[in-house]
Length: 248
Image (tube, rainbow, N blue to C red):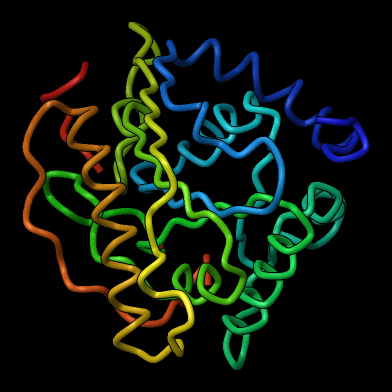
């Protein structure tokens, strides 16, 4: 990607983060060919560790398409906030119409040719076996509004070093960070339909099914039956994990 598209701030932050990720994780990254070379798109990613935004960001940055993440508005203050804005991440205001503002900003970023990362669950998974939970419908709303490709992505490995809601484990031996990106989710049957609640739920279910299927492929075990979609997005990503017994 041209330097003007990635930006000097993003490149500088990546130069700092990349050696840390290489120290912490081995990499098994598959499916990079499914990340579009140009144009706006969404990636739908499972969320299983506080480390995985950086770990996943490392994968996507390596494709040449820097990810734009949602983050709570409080992180956009002071010097760190200036970095967040320079990297064009998307603030999520608290309360009121904060979710609508964030989703509108995401849609605008996609139309401008950016990639926006959605964690459709909206929070770290609470599933005991660390499978993705039901998704929230904000991702469906942006997908239908923009007509952009939705790339499903599963990841596993950051959670073995830092489990959700758990403590950091030993750095050595290094874990392997697995990423598997799939082809765009086929949402053609929804094109032209009004974004009513049931349609948004169906779209979200299709996206989450694709992410879960990829995670099952990484883990080498069957996925559980899908959960019902969780409704509109909220929380830190306008509101989007696997077991340590496998893939050590």
